[in-house]
Length: 417
Image 1 (spheres, rainbow, N blue to C red):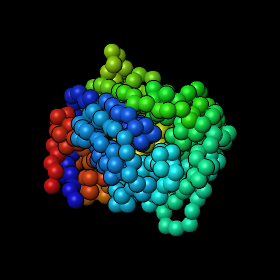
Image 2 (cartoon, rainbow, N blue to C red):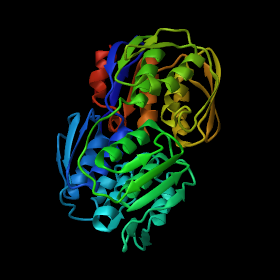
Image 3 (cartoon, rainbow, N blue to C red):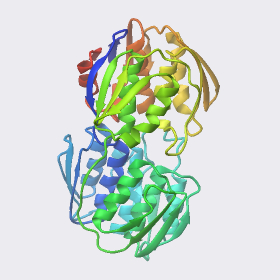
Image 4 (spheres, one colour):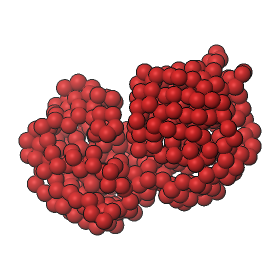
């Protein structure tokens, strides 16, 4: 495993181009299993999680060209088995998205417990209930074993939570079920909309994308399709925090203005000046002020994927900020180690933390426990005095491509060991 050595205290500036949304790339790759024709995905992020998903398809019998580039060409003419490689599944929570397409192509699916961030705390109950409503039968045994002896069938279903991957699982199955399915309490995130549009391009009838009720007319023959992914607003927001916390001036290209509104709104609460002009999101050096309260929410609320980063940014703001992430508790726990850097943090409970700043941070050895809190700790190290170490770096690289190269291009003094 690798560690990132960071000499903090240097102002960063320059330009960053974000690639496609990781959370769109994974379900779109899974959707390619629904057809025996060739699909082409462009602006794909060059990250470890995408490579794992692509190799899962290869293990199932697909041909995948372009791994490690921003363009994937995927042909699933033959799906040779219904149990994807256990070791790969154990590295990626998104592997759960293979269940619906495998049921459609093979009639059976056996997926080991998926890995990724917080695997023990994030269940797939919503996914399984959606598939059962569409005719899947859960079989006894290790992992997740399902079969559809009579094929997938359309259903009218209500998701007990507006889970993103739960919605995507239902969409993938509904596209293959003959008839009209309705998914209520569906997630509205931009990457869910991307999957809906890709399924439409493949030949499924999809209406209501971006709302809490999505109707899918499935069962017809699905064909190949081409899609250029939207720029990743989570990655763009991460680089915005890196610029703001070092009092730097950073220009971020590739994300859509409509997606960046949720980021800009929270930055405004912290008196961080930002502008979106001509496709560029610009961070301007500012004197930060505590936001009072930041609460995550379902889209278009503030995304949980950015809560670790704004918590770290709040350590450099004048005054107090209460950060409330009602969805995931372990992200905030991961930030407790910043107390050893000099941060003034009070963890109220697993979902709420009070940050009082500005704090003079000192370098420290840090543990990256998940993608987003790992990137947040890198941001903290960039603002700290002295040298920090963040490891394992591979955890953060699951969601951020060419991380060392891009930090260096902004003027960061970092090295990989």
